[in-house]
Image (cartoon, rainbow, N blue to C red; front, side):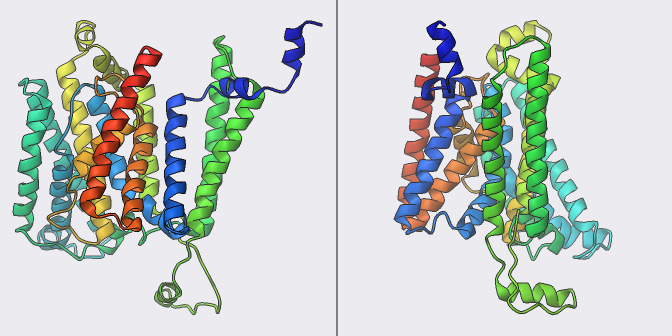
Length: 431
């Protein structure tokens, strides 16, 4: 028997093990950097960084930036930039706050607690966000003004427009149902979190199976079965481990007593309950799935990446790149509205400084996540992971006791280093 036959019958070596898995090396590098970052901060904080409580807080703090980062991927892929997202978030948050505390109660008689109040306020914010985004996209696409200039102007305009909408005041308290999408005030609880986790694992397995069958039916090479099972195991462990961690963060006894009292019940002695998955995380997951489908399965997504890869060729092939620019910026505006709803709901009110410097965090998240500033390349999951890395870095430094100015210095250095690594990676792979 030949050596090749003998080697084929043996268990895979460490080298061909990773090659058979066909994992994205960039993604592996990001995950590795994130794990190292968490372990280092966990050591310096005496184990407090990876506690269920801090993981829960870290998760809900990441959501608003991560939502906007998914839209920033499309903006940067089409070779543009949006510096106005933080200010736009402040404007739409102000619109939603004023809508539910002033306009809707006076105009339609919908007081706080009305079941339609939070829905109409979010719709109002979404409409305003999409209109502003589309207007900025129109100036970029049809008037030919560079996106940098248009959105730099937007950074100044919309931040101060928010101030005029609220008369410079903090607006609150907001509707109780509305605030549930902010994080700790609205969660699935332990049981429904486990149900969601199991369904998520099942969905991931189904997608992986369908992808394998589709590749096989078209004659494309597929991974060995053991490689597919290994990836499936890693996915299941990640999802269920995340759910278990969030469920391990117990609701304080005093809060739990108030919950039972509000329902007219008496809390059993010694009862403990975990928070589970926040509604805001479910919203982020929904946005991530929708944006991934748009990027990979729709004509709009193909046009976005084709335009970013070669704008001239895209236009010559019949793509209306001007109108595409309007669509991309309008989508960014809508995502700013969703992020604004989450940010305001987490605080319980809308402030004038909400979203300050978010434009830098969002751009950094997209770039750290592998979106190329030269256009044409980017992933939704990369941007979300980039947002998580950024938030972990800032939260970890805050827990260690690093001063805010030094935190910004470190974030700036990390951003420049990430772009440098991206340039080296693309030179090496020939992208």
